[in-house]
Image (cartoon, rainbow, N blue to C red; front, top):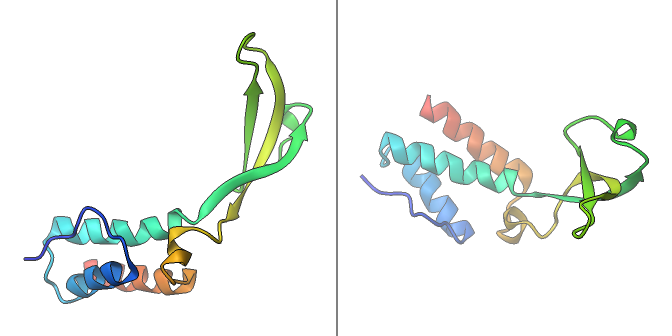
Length: 117
């Protein structure tokens, strides 16, 4: 049996792990690790950026694509302002730096999940 390296640095590293997975050359534990490495490419493509300042948390937009953050004065501990951030896709994320598209990675994950059972 082959092992999944702790760090996959390149597209070739990811593709090699996928090939080992699909050929059945990984232990059950390493199959789970391999799938996790591919999933992390998708999950790591997001970043948070400023959307707007809020009068109160009640004014925030709802949904997974938004979060509220309070900026606090370091000296007094008082809230200076409440801001809303929105989740956006980061064009500089690892997935894109490695030359993958979201669709490619989703397809690989789907194939691996079907194989993993």
